[in-house]
Length: 312
Image 1 (cartoon, rainbow, N blue to C red):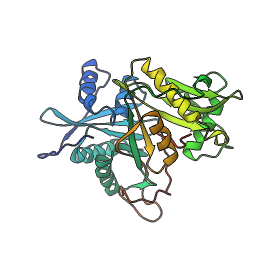
Image 2: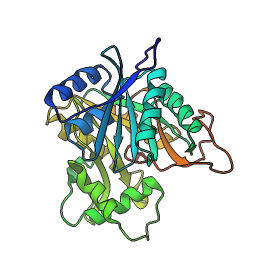
Image 3: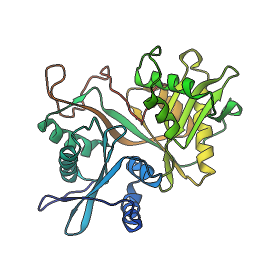
Image 4: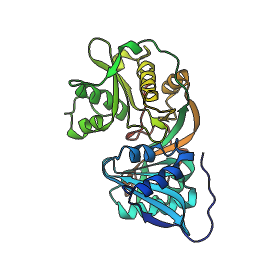
């Protein structure tokens, strides 16, 4: 994981024109050594995710860290930043984007950033602790991979309902345009069809430099513990390998033992801790809290885009 000790004047924060080819090239070069933990930035940059605002923290022309704000999820993402730089980036991005609702970053920088945000009036709600897992080779063949196929017209409503199990959203609520758009925006979405339609899904928001993120892994509760999640995830990895990827990355809730077993069976290994913090303005439950690694695992949060709840 990335560590940096910064001393001297506070880093200067500059907004980047990431549409400029020279700026994009510098961003990829800066983030490449840390791509796994920066994949939310590199993947969205490579795929030109709409509503992106990128910033660099630097001193005397040298970059010390990069941060992004994404309009659709209203999320701040920090990459390749030590604690001091993370604090500076978080404070500046919060001032520029006061509608932010979540923060994603490696554990140390995220904890530092959330302490700053707490002082600015934001509260971290729920348990933000995730594991960062990586896979650098193709997984072993899985039963039921022959039932996996790309999403097609007619699947989207079922996939939205599957994803609601990840986010603890009511199944009976009307499907929203935002939910449909979230599925349609991902360049690759696979489903496992058991003959009755899509009963499991796994997706990716595309490749960064040489890595891609596995996200949106969900299985119909009545069809869990059959290996469907392993099958659809393995197929997703193979599909992305065929497109040039050489590393799969995922962010998983730390207390999700079923998912941990599933991914380890595919060959994923834990590489460190990550934070996905849901933020609200003001007090929650009567208290404003900075990031606290001792939150009860029973506390829930909106898992956003990097979610994998059930392992089978």
